[in-house]
Image (cartoon, rainbow, N blue to C red):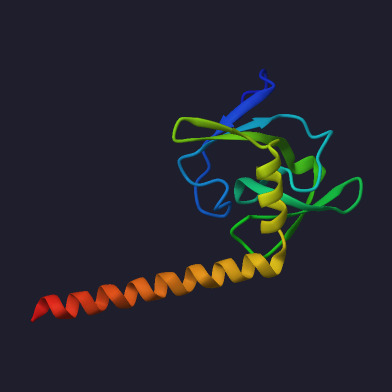
Length: 144
């Protein structure tokens, strides 16, 4: 499964739960260290569904954290012992991006405000809905 001899692992996540910061096809560098988990860190953990990459929203106590995907609204409480490591950066289109940058940290904090996230998801839904209607209209015009 995972190589235990190295301090870091590189994973390529599947799905869209971490959009817009991590998308399918990105390579995520994860440090196998669970001693310094902080709020807003992206953690790799294992549950019944397999390996999951989600953001820490709150440290609940010494044994549990509250996590959520950046593209989700539902949260999950997991035990610290489920965590394999903390993501340190992502490679997108051949360009490495470190998670320690000031702009990245600011964007993450803004994104983690639930009302803003809900609003962004609502706008994306409207855009998809409008694109579908445009496509239908175009198809109808093209048939005649």
